[in-house]
Length: 149
Image (cartoon, rainbow, N blue to C red; front, side):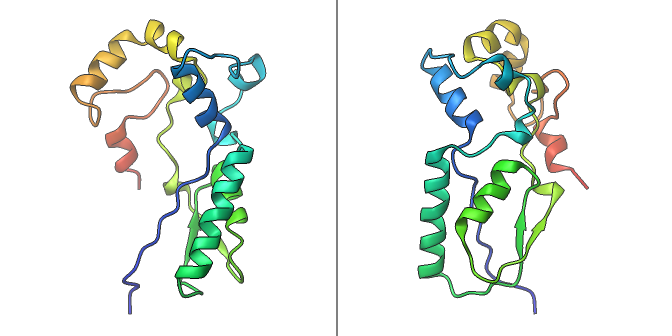
C-alpha cells in the first residue's frame, strides 16, 4: 500500500537567507568575497536555522507517529544539516537530487541593490510571468526546475 501522508520540512535559515534578508534592508555586510565565491548549495545553517530545525524535530517527534515509510533530503548542505538537527530516531535519509531548490546562479550571491542594477530585464520578465519567463544568467527557469526527470 502506498503512503497516504506526506510531511515536508523546509530547511532552517541558511547563510544565504540571512544575507539576502539583510541586503533587502540595505545591509550588504554578509556579501564578503568569500561568501560571493560559494555556490548556494554549500550554504550552511545559521544558529537560528539550527534552532528552527531542532524545534521542528521536537514537534515531529511529539506529533507524528514514527517511523515513517521514507525520509528524503536534498543534496544541499543546509537541507542535510536540517535533517540531522531534526534528530529523528532510527531514520535513514535518502539523498534526492530532484529535491534541490531552483538554481539562481549569479543572483544567489549578489546583494539586492546589485541584482536590481545587473538584472533589470530579468526582473521585468519575472514580474510578468515568474513561472515561465525568468531565467537568470547561467540559471534554471522555474518551469525547467519542475520538469526535472
